[in-house]
Image (cartoon, rainbow, N blue to C red; front, side, top):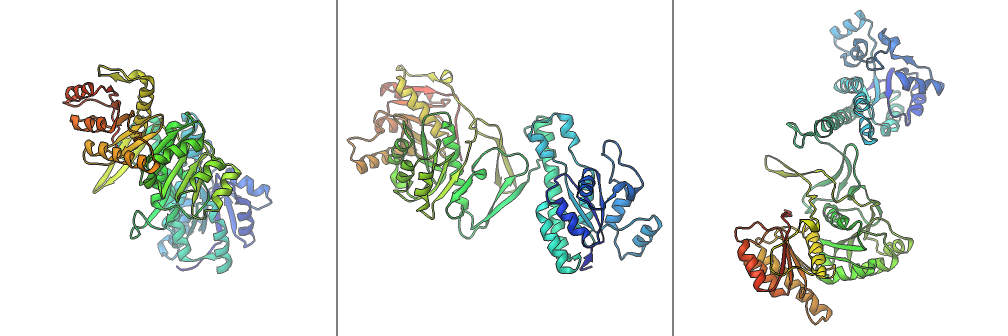
Length: 529
């Protein structure tokens, strides 16, 4: 069948947005309206003539509404193949009327979970009849139109106007595809709640997950790759995906990835002093805390102004005009901030391609969650790296203990190193990164690269010496040999923070003692691949 005229519609929705308007549009085309519970009440209150589902089935709604549409006269009217003689005979024998349109959206399961409802209420908000009707109608889309999203009501009305009261096969196929996606996502949320929240399983036997398309992107990491951005179904914590884009061209795949890295790092300082993070290719190239946001920005920029060109900036405070002006002195791709004042917005407005993202609340750096990575033939799943090390967790392993400032710089460098691709080495001094070495195949080279960048910065700004002199150095994992630590000594570091745990810890500690360094072990590593 190509075009099917809609003569009878079954409406049963939890989301009443647009319902009355749709009901009037259908009634104007002499469509017989059949409905359930609150949906029927809303339509009647709007002056529409509606038949209760019990008038069709011959059975009242029962068991607190749990049983109302699970009936042969409903599903027979949905599943019957209209031009099949046996189906037609069965419909006539059992007085089953055809249903041409189903408008259903499901019980608000995700919203019920999000509001903190108890288990009994959550279970009651698992829809049974709704998904059954959706799946029946979608399977029989050659004859039945299924609409699950209020956003599609206007398209349905336009389709009926264009075809004289019916729908085309192409329209029904699109609706069927969307309907199955809706029930799959719904079941996925329920399965996830049962596994993670109800049963407390970290890694269930069957992993289900789903997302809603937020937008297609121009391309992926490279122009020959296609890409899109999805947001998870159900409740979502604040993050870069929920940020409001105030201005600038659309975000690319790399923009999303880099902005997420910047926001995750700056969130570590959510309760600290004004802090600025500059990221390039998902690695921080400058991080600083200061008395003001503009001070923090300038100090972060000085760490590696070469890499900062075309980078991503994230801040932990509302953005002001002076800081915005400083940021626009070099080419910047994206700026993410909890808020921005009118002066900052006006300054950025002059840079048409700069994207300004307003994030509102910063993500909780200590939140739980799972992270997924695709590999050939499967997925790797792990809990988020939300590990935190307090001062009481630190163990001084050298003869000299760190000074108060050295300890503060160690903690700062350690926080940054957590967000640098391994092997990671970070030098920090006075709450500012002095050098960052990322993603090398050995730790010694990371230490040397970070020191080279610090020397280049000193030459650029005309300093007497690199900021690595008198700095603290953080290593995301233990030093397997003393050579990496000695490279840090050569750069001028006076304190070291690292996990410890190497077979050669004694050798590394001896080297630190010989150089007069203070070194603390955390007992926790932060690999990031």
